[in-house]
Picture 1 (cartoon, rainbow, N blue to C red):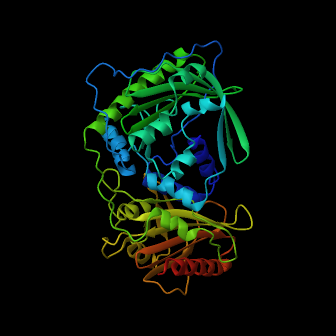
Picture 2: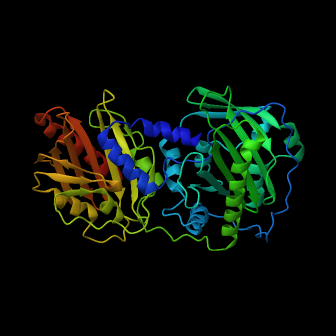
Picture 3: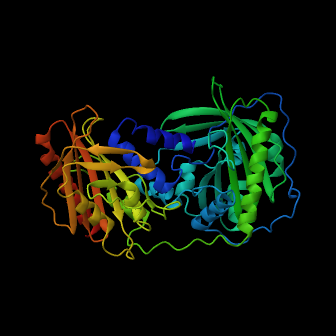
Length: 482
């Protein structure tokens, strides 16, 4: 379900060139940003199945890891996921940035949702609604995705993982707070999920879970009614001490328990690796760079804000920029280059947010990014170098994540009146046949920088668009006390 919600939010940007570029930037910064875990794509229950055998607490063959007694932080839970990813030789971090997901609760951008089951008490076997999980500050969590070792990542091969941690009594009650007899009564049940007034129904069937951890249960989930091409999913939940693990994998043609077994076997292997990684005691995460703004504070900065013409301003989430995965791309030697990859690689430890000002129509919008650098970052600042590179250029080569490139030509400098430590403002065209003019402006005061892009039909309107962006920048800086 979280993946479905993320897909909806991402889908709104389809076809918009500037937003595609920013979307790619977010995906690389946040790693697997569209791979939110949780209940996943649910599954319809076959008739006539037997209730699973009572859960057991004996470990699988091999030496069992001791149950952890410490409460893991969000960052430590992410380190557990990434530790397993490293042991599987993944070329990228496997865990998402929990601060980004949590910051959405501050913005109020989460939709209204309800999750119910029939019978009602069977809801105990269903993972928590992801939006509720992200807003819950009493239980720490991390999410990630684990593609197969040496294999290609895909919807039916990549396991979604949610790790949660709290004091033993609290995490047991929250994720495994059911009596044994409930399992026999909930062998099959229906679940409804309502998001923003739209309801979907799923069939849940409990499965015989592999003997992992202290408590465990497994389930398969399909849509009701099941449509052609609908994927089902298989879930595995395991409790080991203060660590709760929920794994989910999409399965095509899921009709019976035998169809779920390969997915369940793969998740059992991953669950054991996560438990073993947590027991190693090497889950400590390096402290973030000192920053005067947290992701929550950045989101709160824009809450209730309006644009220059009273338009709604939205910054739904913010995140920390981590170290670049692997070796970062070297900065381009050409001064007339707009290079997102090298720019972002130089901003590790910064808090980053991506938002939008929506105009009167769907095609009238402004995208913006805001970055607050850590106090440890020393001049020359990446923003200042970017602004310097754009000055005097009549043509600019834009380089995006993944190696794609496109020229801006012609490029015209615009005049903007804003008090800032560093600024730039340009208008340009793309060779896309639309004839549109694109306006990009940026400004930095202290550690805070803002960049925004908009479009207009004619060059004569570009200066007015730039002036409106500068008005927005001034309002943001004023709110931030800059």
